Structures are given as C-alpha cells and as structure tokens.
Image 1 (cartoon, rainbow, N blue to C red):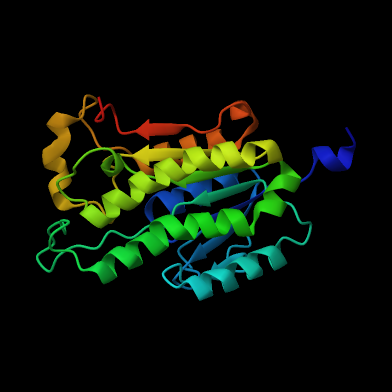
Image 2 (cartoon, rainbow, N blue to C red):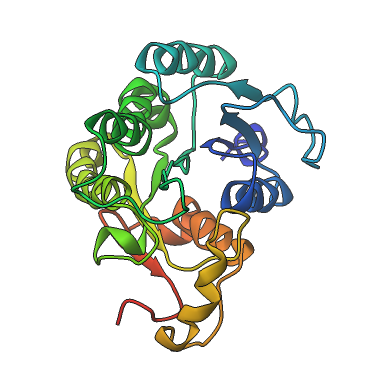
Length: 249
C-alpha cells in the first residue's frame, strides 16, 4: 500500500450534530483523526471544539425534502475526492404534547406524523441514496440511529417517533441487503435512556428497569458508532446494536 493511501484522512458525515449523542460522536471521530462534516438545522456553534468545524458544517432542514436535496448536493460538493467513509444518520425529532406528555396514535395529528417521518425515516433514506456513489468509492459504512422505543411502547416517546424508529430499523436491514454488493455496510444503534439535554426529567424514575441501574452517557454511544464505522466491524452489516444497559431484556 502506498504511503499516500496509508495517510488518507477518512471522512464522515453526521446529521444532528449540535448536541447530545451527535456532539459526542463528532468529538470521538475527530479525536481519531477523521474529517467530520456536520449537518443540522442550526448554524455552527462556537461551543463545538473540533478543528475546521465551522468550515465543515452544513445548515440543512431535514424536515423539508427540497432543502434535504439541496443539502445532499452541498455534501457531494464538499467531498472533493468523491469518497465518503461513513454516514451517520443521527438527526431525529420527537414532538411532545403541550404538557410535555407523549403524543399517542389517537391524538397525534397527521401533519406531525409526516414531519416526524420526513426527518427520522425519509431523511436517512435520501442521504444514503444521494451519497451512494461516494460511500461505494470508500467501501464505507452507514449507521442509522434508531431507539429502544422502536421495539416497545415507551412512557415518554410518542407513537409517531416510535413508529418511525421501528421503520428505520427495518430500513437498515433492507439497506444492508441492497448496499452490500456495493461494499457498503449498514447497521443501526438503538439507544435507551442516555443522559442528554433532551432526556425527560422523569427518566431517572426508570432506573429500576435498567439492569445496570444507571443512565447511559453520550460518549458510550459515540464509541459504539465509531466501532461500526471502523475496520474492526468489517464483517458486520444489517445489525441493530442495543445500547441501553440491558433495558431491552
């Protein structure tokens, strides 16, 4: 292998980078020497400590399919080498009621269902399809962020959110089969109760349901995402990794 190939900087695109799991994931990949292109609805935050962060940030609204297409075109433009080693679909929305309670399948307006699925389901599909050539060139990896709510009724996650994550888990399996012949691996992670700013204050009351008796940390989720994008997972595809301290058992 040539020295230039050995020293090639790997590139990852991450949606939902502004806080929580996304923020921790950028730090994990940056620490390993990856170039990270971040995407979110918000402008780049000065609180984000990674190198070249502002230059490698794309403001895109995944709630809007047209803006998502514009964002994909910009991502491809930023990938001047035509190579993408990892795509992490982390962005997601989980609307709540006016009182902060979960929105069930009876009370949730159809418009909310459309918005949730556009971000949580169609967004990852559009990005994967739009960046397929770049992922193929790198024999790269896709990681979709699902949720424990995708496989059980959750006390805080609404019906639209939970259903979109279940659909994303199924899509992960389909994509693994479809992208495999292109050398691209597709996996998912399903976090449980992770200590992030969007976690419900009532989550502490669920500790007795978690065998490890504690909340997860964003850095622990980021480490799992990194593993699924790195060489050590080179024969893993179509899987969904539960990161919940045993809460799913």
